[in-house]
Every structure is written in C-alpha cells, then in structure tokens.
Length: 133
Image (cartoon, rainbow, N blue to C red; front, side, top):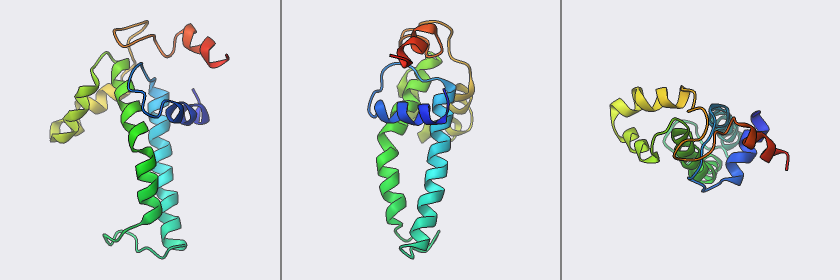
C-alpha cells in the first residue's frame, strides 16, 4: 500500500473499527498526520497570525485534528487487530509504560500471517484482489 492508498483507505474506513490494517497503512497515516499538522500550523501563523506554541488557539490545526480524530483511532485499532490484539489495548496510552513500549512494538511488528480472529490478512491475495474491484 502506498501513501495515497493508505490515506484513502483510512478516510473510507472513517469509523470502521473492525478488520485489520497493515503496517504501511498505519505508518503512512501517521506520516499524513505529521505533515498535516506542520502545514496547518504554518497556515495558522501565515494567514491567521495565530502565535505558534504560545498556548493560543490555532484554528486550522484544531479543525484538522478534529477531522482526523476518529480515523486515527480506527486505524490504530485495526493495526492492533493485525497483530491479534484487542483494540482495548489502546487504553494503555493512558499509562507511561503503554506509550513507551508495548503499543509502539505492536505497531511495528509484522501482523499475523493469514486470517486471525479479527479478519483476513490485509497483505493476503484476497485483499489485493479487492483493491482492484
């Protein structure tokens, strides 16, 4: 999956918390968020004169963050499903250890080969055939 396909997939599955997401889909989405926040922060400063990093409201960045909130949770849950973990593991972000180790490792780990309890392998032949329908 390339960058545009991953972004399109995440927006098509806006609130779809079922199924699985490949590493490329998840990390391209993370790159999209990173780049989007940089661009919106620059636009907030250039167009709206919103002071950067001063704790002031940056309206474009806030709107962008709201737009990507649900698809970000959805793709994170689907990524955990790919390594055969429940989406409830995302609650570990509320702890220090969850931010540092397990979630990051699981998001970087290759998903289970073949189907698992959350669905078909996103890198399997069925997934490839579905993309060209």
